[in-house]
Amino acid sequence: MDGLAVVLDGRPAGHRLRLTEVRAVLPRQASSARVAEVLTDLGLLEDDTAPPIRAWVERRTDDLPAAFAVIVRAWLLVLLDGDARSRPRSQASIYVYFGGVRPHLQRWAATRGHLREVTTADVKTALDPLRGERRSNAIVALRSLFRFAKKRGLIFADPTARLAVPRPDRHSLLPLTDTEIHTVEQTAVAPAQRLIVALAAVHAARAAAIRHLALDDLDLPNRRITLAGHTQHLGEMTRQLLLTWLEHRRTSWPHTPNRHVLINERTALGTGPISPNYLHQHLLRRGVHLDRIRADRVLHEALTVGPDPLHLALVFNLSHTTASRYAAIAQNLLDAHPADR
Image (cartoon, rainbow, N blue to C red; front, top):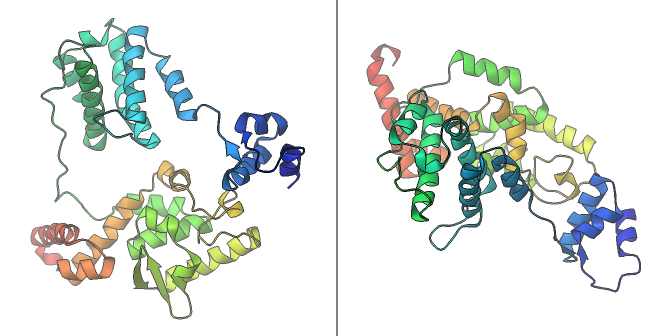
């Protein structure tokens, strides 16, 4: 309130402020960010600052030799903004794309003066040590970069023209290993972390469903929970973790207007859900992958009850295609280990 009084003092009703003005008047980053958020909700703020992602692109490409930097910078900005033939990518995608090409560009820049000098053999040598997701990400990113450069006449030939993105093996999914389970146990210690893991491990909830879970989706007396519109029975373990988190939530932010179950210091001031980065910071960055935990839960159900696609679709609200895929994987595992039936 004090911040709003400072920036709005003497302004006519309905006057729109620029974000740079707000930051100049309120030197504390925390207060200026909150005031800016409120002004945005009121329709009184105009963001005249350059998006951080653009500054990031400039900063990261400046580390490359000029002949490489010009092309890579233009490529990243087209990914960000889109063009006549492609839609804009998310900021997270920009980070993944650049991460897939950066180590190879730095290695090539030591012996090449321009991107056009990179050969098919160079690309093959760069990709040979990579496996799995790292290899797939690198191929997708390199193909995107060289196709961009070829279409704009910046290189003569595309050294990735014959590269194919490895298709994931639909039958390669295996249950969580003891090491992976131990990592989860060691990482998920805070109330929010334990609840997030339980929602994925017990209810096979996706990250988006966990982020958007609202208080109105909980029916604790009747032991029911609704995730992404699908109502499930609320088991005792998840119920206890919910009660622990809700008590922590009440103690930490007793007056929050936010109706989402999971909130933090920032979202407690508003009504929006936590960001995907919240899950990344608390779990993924520490080696806990929610998609892996969720997949293990569905696979466990298929192995325990039987590889029945209809059952999996009804229990976890899966599409017929996805349910059939899990059933096929479970059937393969059961056929390979008949003694475990």
